[in-house]
Length: 348
Image 1 (cartoon, rainbow, N blue to C red):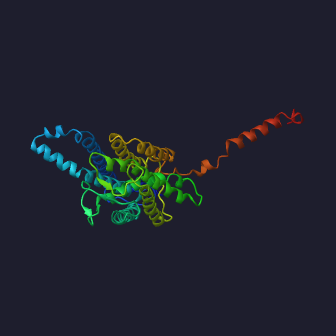
Image 2 (image 1 turned 60 degrees about the vertical axis):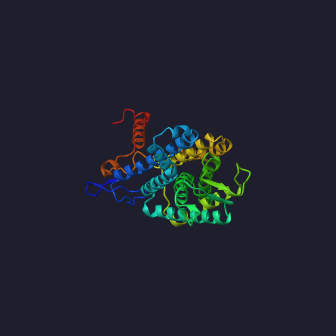
């Protein structure tokens, strides 16, 4: 960010957030490169997982043709692929959030998101409330209390952050008293729409990652699951909103590109997983309630001003004293009318 001091000297600041607070301990370019690297590794891990689950696993003869070291590498990658893509996703969201929100507001979102989602997951896997009766299998990393993989709260955080930042677009332009509630509900819906598409593929695919002990009408899932998702997402988004208080972030379309890419990448992964497993209906529901609204919200965000972070031009009193053009034209017109006045013809 730059501006001119009173002496006319150009002054430069370290990389700053949209509200003018310094947020990065490193230079902006290095931090943004780390963010891009984490996001790229996240997307690469998603693509690798898709290739493994949709092509390699259905063709075991291809795996059997590999040398022993190749088979071992494949087994290791399949056993840790889920961990990698969620860890990289959380890292990308944390770097992105620190750049867009500042470290203080990022932590005000991250801590409630991880804490509340972990509490809901532990409660759900032990009591069936609020999602239903289910349990996690292997492939997603170390399980906290032997119940919930440590990566699951990380996924709640990074998809929840991208969902809420996109949902806040209307909050930035409207001022009625329900707008905060509407933004929270919309953010929770974008988060839940992702699960509409992901959950059937992760439980009914060739390699399931969790299982339902209480089958339900939605491709083996109880409808209670989606109520639990809405409740959990709305809970940590509400806490973050209250902690931010009057220090609410305002992001334009350019700044929302990162959250949009993060959301779309994870939604596309879930969509292709569902379609690859022959599960079509949840994909349509997710497109209607998730991907479509997310793209629309991003498009409706304000475009960045070309004059952002540029100095205000100095005023020139001598120019400011020049009368407006309309006033000059008016005076000239009156003078011309006076010259044409017959009473003044021949006057000296």
